Image (cartoon, rainbow, N blue to C red; front, side, top):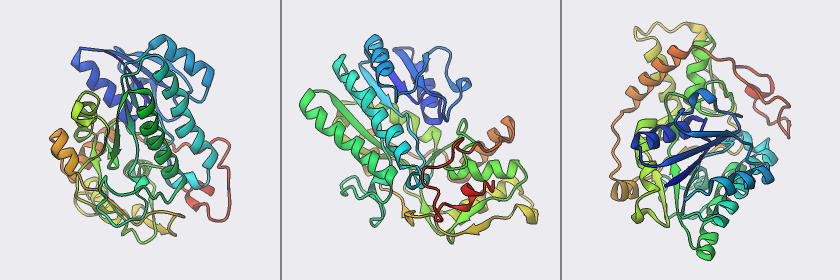
Length: 342
C-alpha cells in the first residue's frame, strides 16, 4: 500500500513512520515543512519531501505523483492556547493545509484517511469526554479541528472513501519538540529545568489532564488505518487516569531531584490562567479498548522518567518563539510569550 504521512518530521508523525517502516509491507511517503519538526526524526527508509502544505499548487502536484491509498494526517500547528492570538495561522496551518492535501488525495484514489483531531473539540463540557458528546470548542484550535472532522465526514459520504478520526490524550515522549514555548507542557517543564530555569504554571495548577506516553499511542493509531471496524468512527486514544498540572510538576521535579533537594530558583511560579483554557479535559477510552484492544503499558511516572532520560541525552534546547510574533498581541497575551520568560 502507498501510505502518506504528513507532519512526518514531528513528534507523533516520526514515531508513526518508524512503526510503519518496521512492518516492511508498504511504501511510506513522508512530508513536513520543518516548522516544528526535524529531519533527524525522519526514518531514512521513508520517501521524505520537505513541503509546506499551505502551498496549494505544490501540494496538489506532490499528491498527484504519490497517489496515496492511505493518508495519516498529523501535520498541525497544535498550539491550542496560542490559537486565540494566532487565529489566522491556526486556520491556515490546520484546516486549509488539510484541505489542500486531502482534496487532491481524494481525486487521485484515496481509500482511507486517518485524521488526527484533538480533545479540544469537546470544549468545557463535563469530563470524562465521550465520543458521543457534541463538539463545543472553546478556542480557535478546537474550532478548526472540529471543521476538519466535519469536512471529512461530509466528503466521505459524497466521494466514497473511508475515514477514522482520532482524538489523542496529550501524547508525550522522546522526539517531542523541546524548543516550543507555546505547547506540550511536559516538554516545556523538562526543557526549563535542563536550562536551569524555573517553569510557569497558569492559574492555580489544578487543571486536570490525561497524558499518553508515545508507545501507548502509536500502535493503536496505526491500527485505525487498517481495521475495517474503525471505519467511520471517532476514537479517543489514551488512558483514563487524569492528573493536575501541579501533580505533573511534582513528578517532573521529583524525577530530576529524587532526594527532594529542589533548588529554590527552579520551583515553579504561577501566572494568570490563559484565556479560554479549559479547566478539566480528559476522556473515556472505552471505544479504544473495544475496537483496538487499548491498554496502558507505561505508567505516568515511568513515562516521565523515560522522557527526561531522553531529554538529558539530547541536551537543553533554546526556546524558539515565533519570528514575527503573534497576530493579536493584546493585553491578554500570556507574559511567558510576550516577555519571553522561558
